[in-house]
Length: 297
Image (tube, rainbow, N blue to C red; front, side, top):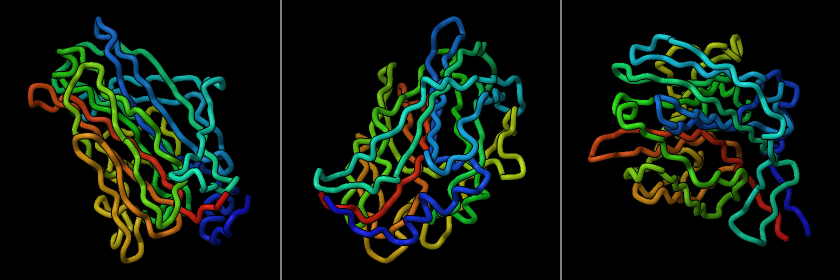
């Protein structure tokens, strides 16, 4: 087995920011499940860089509960469970490819049950953390760009005891430059709602001056600042001419594209749930693609 050399830019992605005092958020998402009697199980999933993540996962993590007018009603503090802390496998598109040994992402899951009685306009829930990896290529000043993971539980969702969709798989953490991406970015909806998929901008919201607000800041939350041109929702990966931008099938969630630029890139995918033609729920996944030269086994 031999590894092809990785460019200096890629090495910096994994080693260069090790001394920075930041969490190095890699991605995250929030979902909810209706348990009945106005009780909802809230699930927050957070991904961080194994090597450069400093400090470790929040203990506790804070989820803010806001009304439709962006006013804080309450917040939940959820303790970190060290038993729910796993490392993702860097699955590649070809069995002959080999990822570098220093690509590593940890995942943890926070869960809590909250009582949310009916309220005009519904609720907004959010968790915030700073910061992202300094070497992200498609954002302006990425080390100053925080992350907001959240959901809106609409008035209709409350009335109908709706549960949000949940993504079926987490995307590969390492992909090969100039090789096609083919990934089933589908979700499952317990209520049988119709799902529509689209690429969307991840959310920012906090800075290094206040990296862990407890409670989180009030909405609304800004989208991440794309380094545009060339990057944006329509082109999240390719900094060079050519290549195939990411696209997603709106009906199946199948994600395709061919990246032609080495580096780290923030990506966002949304799944919208419709019931009787009405939008009832949206989940937003924020994740990071590491694009590099793959070794050959």
